[in-house]
Length: 157
Image (tube, rainbow, N blue to C red; front, side, top):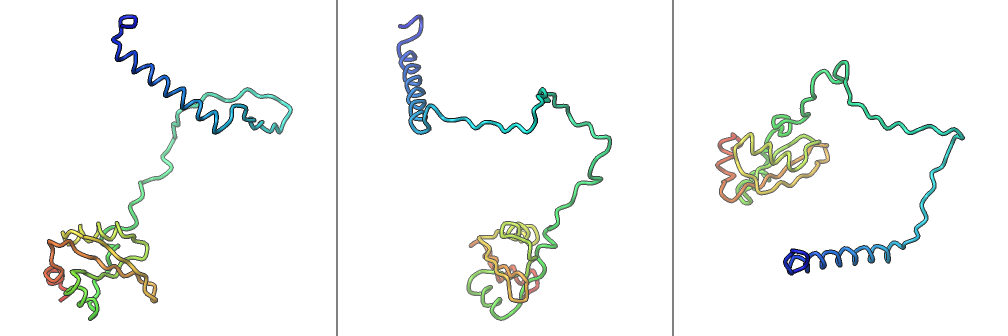
């Protein structure tokens, strides 16, 4: 034992020190030891001591009267379901519902909105922007949900 320590821990500390030294050497090789430090450009001849005291903010009044509400909630994200023939084909063949959604909504937001509104699990969402500048979302349902049943419940069919 080494000064009251068991042999195994002494070996372990030696190994960690060796590892640290190796890392230091690696850094020195990669970066170089004598790196030139950038000199700070002085713009005035007078020297002022740096301001080191940082005080906590104690505002006299709040800068915002009320916290802003999220711009897109589930009702503003999903505008309406699409009931075209191709959308019906998607419902029957691919277990997919088709919605017109807000242009600013992204896929995770659309997924969340459909989950909240219709209490269904979503497998994935595909989106596209139509030539008339409306965003269309293809919402593929999880295998344990049937798009036909959900469409009936919503009132598409």
